[in-house]
Amino acid sequence: MRLALAVRLWRFLRRRCGGGLSFATLADLDSVLHVFTPGGPVGVDPEFLRDVAALLMLCEDLGLPLLADPCDLPPAAGPVDRVPLLALWTGAGSAGPGWGRAVRMLLDGVEDTAERSEPELRRSPELAKVLADNLTSLSALCGFDPATPSDTWWARPTHTLRFAEVLLKVYRSRFTVGELLFLYTAQPHLAGDDPFPLQDESEAIGDPLALGDTEPGQDGEDGFSLWALRAALRAVHVDEDHIRAWSWPRISASLRQEFGYVAPAAGPDPLEELGRHLFPERIGVGVPPSARRYAVPLAAADTSPLMWADTPLWYDAAAEELSIELPLRDGPLLDALLHLRPLRAAERRAVRDLYFAPRAALAPFAALFENPVGAFEHLVRCGDGDERFGFFRAAFALFHRRCALLAEHLGRHVLTATGGDSDGVEEATRVAWRVLRSLWADENVGLAPWEDDAGAPPEVTWGPWPSGGAFAALLGLLGTGLVGEIGAPPADDGDDDRHHHHRDEDDDAEGRTRRPRPPDPSDCGGARFVAP
Image 1 (cartoon, rainbow, N blue to C red):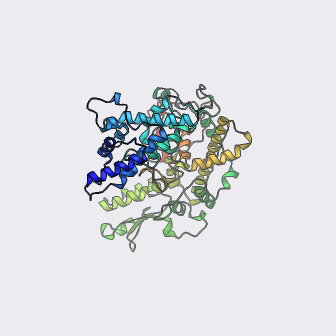
Image 2 (image 1 turned 45 degrees about the vertical axis):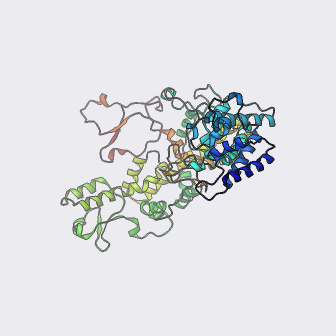
Image 3 (image 1 turned 90 degrees about the vertical axis):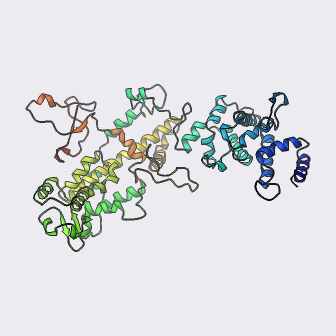
């Protein structure tokens, strides 16, 4: 039965293929592509016909020989030797015999076909090698899944035919492989074909900000270098009128509309909760006293409710919760704890969670502050909501102005590099802002694969926007202005010369630091920044 079906199939293919498909060739194809359904009823596998058709189309479209030259065959030639392209579909992948020759044939056919259709097209000889080294990455862009054997570009001839069509388009396009991988994947940049090459380690140690020049060889002296951007960011100033224009509703709308902030699908909105606790009088709606407090559960059986009286901590016996309300200062809290009996384990956990609750609520918005740690301590210890809001909106006004500068800098740089019209700065700035608001910072690792058929980005390690995004990453150029370490303050032994002030490049001639200082952290438990 199988022999009769094979003969009928050979006669059919011989008529369709002009006599070029011999019975021996059909046997070679069967050894890899399998004429009959494996393990099923006797009959020709429909996939075999599609695979043979794809193989013949591949040979015809790319001008590839179906059979190897008899003079080049080894003494004990097998199917893969006689039909070289079969090496792609043996299932062994790059470890299979004849794989390298088959891939070279495929890429040579792509190159020859592209140059036949466009005689003026002469790409560099390195392109074929770059394509060969990055076939897996390019196939993922086409919808193949290298991790699933049945979904790779070499799983079947039909897959390979579709992939060859994409490679032909890549070859004929004006984009390089490195540019395509840079634009559409989250993989490391392609060495030697990187549209935005970074410094090597030795160059980065010598001058870490010598990047961004419009023309090569300027070593950071260009007006669009990172050094120039850092200087411009440090020079930003906002006046009182501009600061006062920022109300809480306007700040909230800006974070959502301009910076892409999105509240989590489940649970309360962290931004709204922040406003209720820090400056409830400013959010535009009435906030009940219970909503202004940070609370944690603490069962009455695990504590002595009356012992929390006359302390910054308040215990609600009915709700069985321990809570605090800002401001919360270390001194009164420590003094109260010193006069209490030793705390039980549940009480210690409750006090610890309450102490860090306001700081944890501020953490998702750390990007808004120059010095997040100092800002958090200042906001937690400020005397009233008006003072806290004044500090918060001043920080946000400065952050917003600097983000506008980043977008304008990027827009002007693109116009200069592309020879655009200077009249288009405003539109280029708008486009740059839209790009920056939708980009996560480098190394903000996705918690799921970035390539998704639905086109939705994965959840990331650090969020929400603007924290963990491009704006926050670029504002890292500001730095601290000092190289130092965090440590306990040295003992005062009267020798002032031992603890002299260390100037950095941003100090003026009289030793004054021009950069606005964040709130002094020296009143935050004794820790301070010690210059080396």
